[in-house]
Image (cartoon, rainbow, N blue to C red):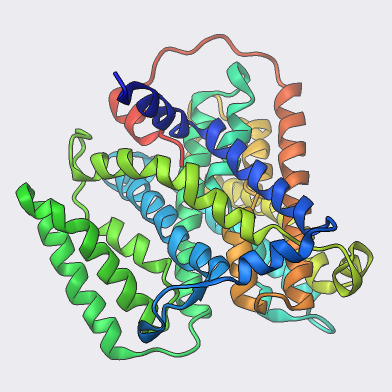
Amino acid sequence: MRRVPSRRFAETLRTETAGGVLLLAAAVVAFGWANSPWAGGYARLGDLRVGPAAWHLDLTLAAWAADGLLAVFFFVAGLELKRELVAGDLRDPRRAVLPVAAAVGGMAVPALIYAAVNATAGDLRGWAVPTATDIAFALAVLALGGSRVPPALRTFLLTLAVVDDLLAIGIIAVAYTAALAVLPLLAAAVALVVFGWLARRGGLGRWLLGPLAAVVWLFVHASGVHATVAGVLLAFVVPVRPSGDDVAARLEHRWRPVSAGFAVPVFAFFAAGVPLTGATSFGAAMRDPVALGVLAGLVLGKPAGVLAATWLARRATGAAGRGGLGWPELAVAGLLSGIGFTVSLLIAELAFGAGTPAGEHARLAILLASCASAAAATLLLRSRRRRPASPPPARHEAVTARGA
């Protein structure tokens, strides 16, 4: 009987709305604290170092949140993406072509807009900042639409977001890796192979998955590649079955509450505390091409890229949206993809460094753009007619339609 409340709490954290609310609450608390008379305490907390120096792991709490906790987030997102590839929409090229094209367009156009704004006097290092989509936040906003949301729109947005995450982690691995240490990378590959073998073997070997995952993360971190990449690599070697009864399903079920209820909110808490004073004031940010490029890329570039790429894919392949997905619904998906938040904040830190004026301006622009995109999508959803209740989805759709 004592376990019932904890189980109910874990199930609550598996819903999109709860994860999104916690994410938003953490960001609001951080932003308020960073702009309060006690802002020094917030800065000291983020700079507090924890971990063994001998292993080069004496990281600040903010760094642990970005390098360690976000690896959990990418692990869960990677499991969801692999399930989409094996048993979901990405398994069928005819059903995958539109959301995949939308994801690519929704990343390319914002990057081009940012580059155009920063071509002369700006900083091109942040070109990837407006390319990301926050799965948890976007699905939480979509869930607020209730019966106005056709099931096909949620599936489309989920597929778009997981493809976006895969491409974003590729960008992080390639564009934001300054130096590469080969031996730790090889060691990570060996540990990853053993992890995948044990995940397939089952039995008592599964007790070693946790320690092995930590070893993979440790070697990836030591290699110079951003440690969050380890989360996706680990997810991709976990076996997935179309039936949904497999190691991947159990791991996703176990770790989703940790990701939504702890990892992502803690990262948001340390990343969203932008002080609006001095060089990082609102006025200074709005005069910085970095902030303007991020704002324009997320608020305008994301929906424009999603709609344009979807239109081109339809023209080129003849593919059609399912379940009543018209242009208004696709516009909602485009606006929601402009909620960069978690991954955008991470890329901004990698591109500009923590505490720099450009980095602070980019962070403020991400917060503003995410709020603006969420508000615009909500208004568009509210303007849609309430739809009648839909029949429950088929089993494979129910499995793949879990929120991030």
